[in-house]
Image (cartoon, rainbow, N blue to C red; front, top):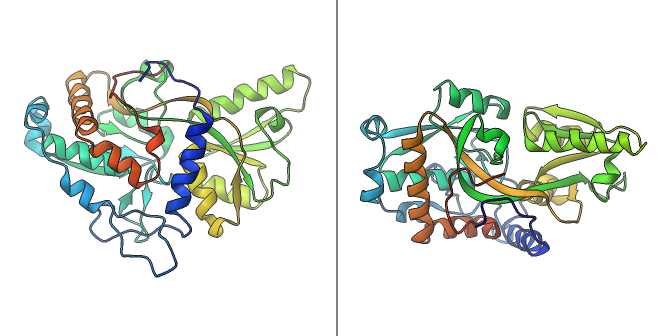
Length: 322
């Protein structure tokens, strides 16, 4: 894949819509084994959660790659990964309220298996992810975080997926929002510290420079809070990454609460697994493990199971964003 983010095509958008539509009509639910599995859905009620237990089980340790993992992690047999577990289908909790699931969770487990270690997920606010990584509280982050040059000054990234920002509104689009320019004068919800917040603030500047009403940015700690804001009419729209927005619009209230504004995703680019900049050996091991997963096909199968295969990368790059 190119080392710079690219504008995602309409094919990407339609493919994700089609893929997720095939997966979802019901809300979330997860299996007891924590491997992404789930009890079969009742007849006539397709599940929002694919059963990926067999896919994860099939991933084999790559001895050569595992040999590159720094000794302290290999000896501990575990990597501690921080995420913001409120962003389906990326990473979220199963119906039991405690089991992490999602395509990112499955990819993390598969990377762990390649390295011969277990990956332990820790839930925290998105805005705390980078500082927790820098302080050594966790080893990795994986939370649909865009790999950008600005963030590369703070942490390193191993790129694993390509996405872009989209706009989600209440069903029926009562405020008639059709794109970024129609957000002027509106209240828009974002998750604190995300690229969505940066984009909203930049868009506000464009609104005021054009002599239009200002855009009000409401920053919260989670997608869940933003959905509540939108449902109650306290905001007119939510900015979110395309996979999450499509998933939420299909599942929340059985598809009756929200819809995604048609159009090309905004500021397309890669998501990256975050690694402390002082820990290059770990970043390189993660990169090699992900590349091994890409080459043997396990990576593509996991993304396909979640209906997001059009965001797949052909190569696991280190700091490939711009």
